[in-house]
Length: 93
Image (cartoon, rainbow, N blue to C red):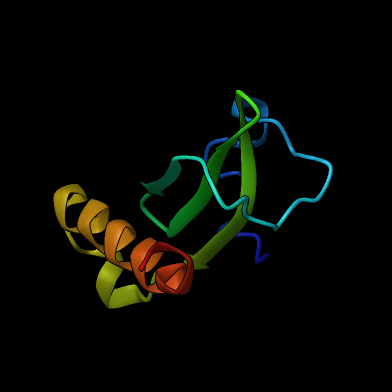
């Protein structure tokens, strides 16, 4: 990550368990997409409930362009939702 992105997104790692096979989905279990937007970056985390615990399936983040950094926070949040849904559409659909 670039220096502008690092430290600008909250720590998702402490909110969920990384299962025995991170990055794999179970056949059953609620999938929980999460997103976040800061002034300089977007982030997305895909989690799934497996055996009673919330397990991380994947992380994604990207820096915002200079033009998108001027967006209001509401539009940045929507960008984060769209980014996360596009990134993990193959697992959500």
